[in-house]
Amino acid sequence: MEPYLPMGWLLLLVATMAPAACGWIATTTTTIQTRPAHHDEPSSSSDSRFYFAYGSNVLTDTMIYLRNIRNYRNATAAVLPNYKLVFHGAAAVERTTTVKSNSTTTTGVHGVLYELPPFDFDVVSRTEGVPLAYQWQPCRVVPYIGNDKNAGELELGQARHEDDKTGSSRMITAQTLILPVASQFLPAPLRPRYARPSRSYLEIIQRGAQEWHLDQSYMEYLSSIQPSNQQGPEGRLLQMAKLTNDNSLPLRSVWFRQR
Image 1 (tube, rainbow, N blue to C red):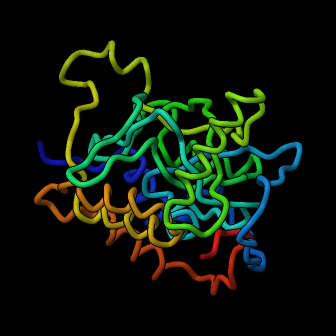
Image 2: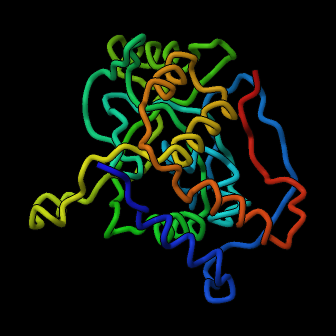
């Protein structure tokens, strides 16, 4: 099946074309900080919300220019165990144990763990089409530590070992987006259907994986995904948002993992 433009991207198109009508979008900017290569776990304020992104939001340009989220407090590469990445045009996650491609097997879904203030967490909800297109799902993710090409898998293995030995864990409780549970009760023509991602949408995820230096095995897995024959509008939409953004954007406040 050929992809359709996901609801979240439709909402973003409206926000990009008519920013004055979207007063709920954040507009603050701050100065960048680079994140140290080693850390124990992200710090958090009492009102912070942890959001695990695995689709287009892995690319920080999406968060900055399309969602206008520029003041997130911390961010790090992370892995969500026991889930797999699927596509219904847009990305989604489903419970599983392993993900296999032609050349590699990877455990879980890799992405970015953002620490957001409540206002920006609500922006993600609105622009992702919650609760119609997605719903929030509590989850536990393992932040990357170190600079190895398989740092995520190593840290996940260590976290599981600690769970088995002591009951402690390096895992962080977060929220991620899944397809609405109620969608399975819709009439067949209205249910979300599996559909290959557009080339443009898949390229955005791959660019985000490179930006955050996700595990080599996971980037190979992303490369093994066959996109649809359609280019898709997502790349053009992102480019348009960058061109129409009036702010010079000094740089956003974020800790990010460097190799």
